Length: 175
Image 1 (cartoon, helix red, strand yellow):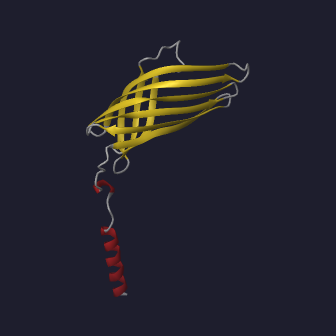
Image 2 (cartoon, rainbow, N blue to C red; image 1 turned 90 degrees about the vertical axis):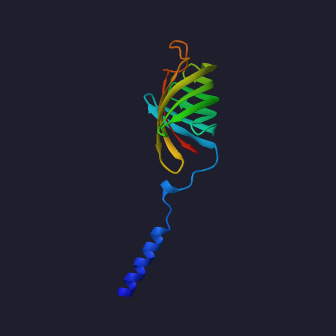
Image 3 (cartoon, rainbow, N blue to C red; image 1 turned 45 degrees about the horizontal axis):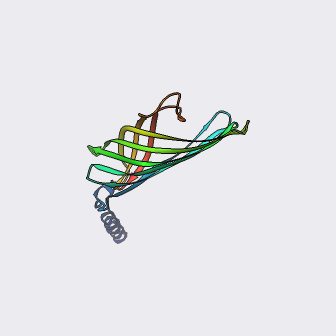
């Protein structure tokens, strides 16, 4: 019994020492970053929407990142259906490895159809989002990104958006 106990103890300790801790893993040497977010929503009148916002960036310095981001959204309800595509550059400045400020310029292409009257519309709008947020490490060089941005080009009665304020949640790999 003693030999079995010693053999088991040696096996467990060898296995334990062979593991690599996430916090001690070597940092990536690539300057490319990838990420984005996905979302969906439900509402009254059978409203449903789904959205994807991929992004690709490049770390210009240890704290400054620039890249391109896109948005694809599809929305439907009992009364209407719309699709929206957006694309544009972004820049983020990271400080204290836990916070960031950023800018995101996107040009949107929108198609809208009224299901009741058959009215169709196509529109375009540019948005310049400025804001910031918090980064939470979830892996070696992976982060959960929580933030709030405001569209400084938003005009209340002349916009396809309901508000200029945009909360965002996403993931970034490569920082």
